Image 1 (tube, rainbow, N blue to C red):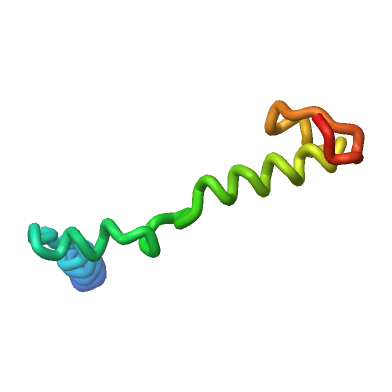
Image 2: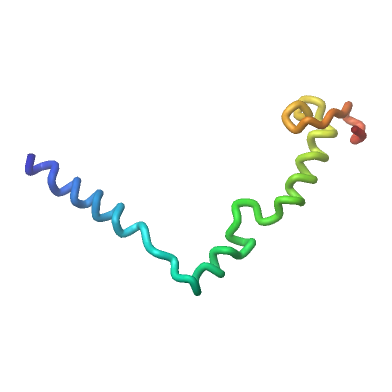
Length: 72
């Protein structure tokens, strides 16, 4: 039992210090567009639509249909 005590305390210590409170004045840094998973969602959606329109195999996932000419 003594062999498991140290690793358990190390894991609990590492997990407990990873969570912190974000202060109100620090939230502005987290709300910047650069911090988003996709900083340009509209541009990504347009690119995905254009790609799906030109690729006949990829059109099923986005709902757009196309034959490779770029028109819907």
